[in-house]
Length: 175
Image (cartoon, rainbow, N blue to C red):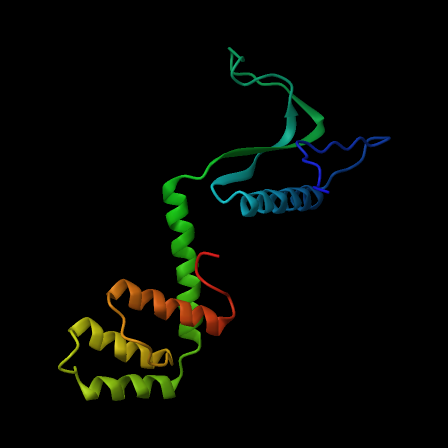
């Protein structure tokens, strides 16, 4: 059976309590985790805690003189949700790629660097272009075994990333 969908959480205390800033931060952190889980389930949407503090007593759009009233006895966390912008998708992808490449770089030591230099000294083969030559050298640096010939630079890059992800145990880039 599917879990019920929740739109709000209410807590009523039997008597006034002291809500320290540490308590508030922990509540916001927990709500942020819930928002993050929502984003995992809905990758084309974003959600975040946006309004945090005393509960507004009036609508800020309806206030004419700029004086908002708040209920200081109610701590409120309001979350906003919207479509993920294309730039945010790109940034998230780039961040992911950065972590994959950083992880791969952390596994490089002197033996890999020497193999890279060795491959450079061999020089470019008559049947490969400059890009193919550099990819062959870089593959040695990342300990990537030779495979069937790759047709395009993009396929070579995908192949290298996939192999590094497999080495890292993380699956494929867009799972």
